[in-house]
Length: 204
Ligand SMILES: [Fe+2]
Ligand SMILES: [Fe+2]
Image 1: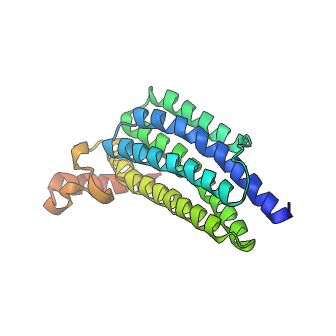
Image 2: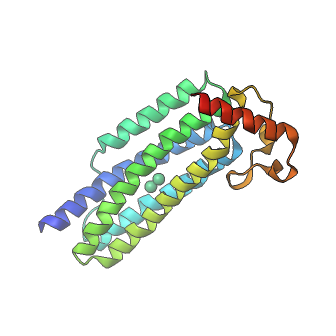
């Protein structure tokens, strides 16, 4: 087998093992998440991840290779860290626990983005364009998942910052697209709490 194709197959074997581990880890992350949007994001990404495994199997087929996983030690470590995060989160405030879950999950997404980026380039380079298309499709879903986690974390960080500043704001107001539902109300308490939060952040 030519060296670039061999390298691509090795990358896909690593990814197959990584993705398979994630199908076991994501339900635990979803169960541990407090905020409904985070729970939903993990559940949605579980369904996508099952699709990633199928897409990888198709990619092996296109290359005329058997889908054989190769132990991905990096993902084993990230999944182990994710499990630790779930355990440690039981002792944390819900907001802090959710933010820690997001941090763990984004490490996973960034690993996948890196791996699919490399695999896609290799597939293109050797003219395996159908295979490259499959990998690009998955890469897009990994990037979207990462983007969604960032969007979910923004209001949670804002809320945690307000909590640290001693302000009282209803978590229900943390809502759509990383914006406060009450933003249009311009309530004094929110404005005051926001100022306190800015002061608290600037003191650090
Ligand atoms: Fe994936
Ligand atoms: Fe992913």
